[in-house]
Image: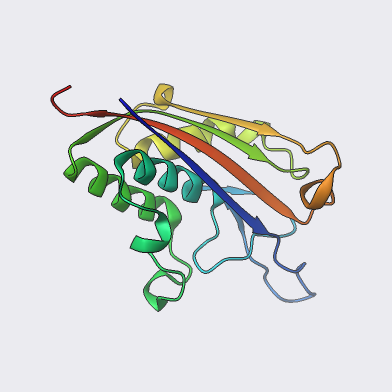
Length: 166
């Protein structure tokens, strides 16, 4: 068995201005209703990014930035769940099988509880597993720090892999 830890955080993009469509908030491949999305080169899906890093770490394959650098125009506004799937396929090619991912999202707003099941299903689909193999929890930061002030969102993820032949 191999275990990897992933972390990602993004600040919220500026609020929408009258007549201008703002950035969508995407977490775990799910569009979450909110007045601001997250800043980032891709779609800024911090859940998908943290899970990607956890998988790559468990397999000893580095991190998301090595495979999908944020200065590469190919990844501008990319769907991060698709990037997760591509990274997962590299993990499989390296001889590993996905076992489980456990994810904690830290956000003061919006309330994420109603979206957890959909996020679990999207992440599980990206790693070719059933939703029972992905656990997502949403927590607040109890008003403390940059997250508590509503400046952004952070995500921690742990992934467990089995090595083929074990």
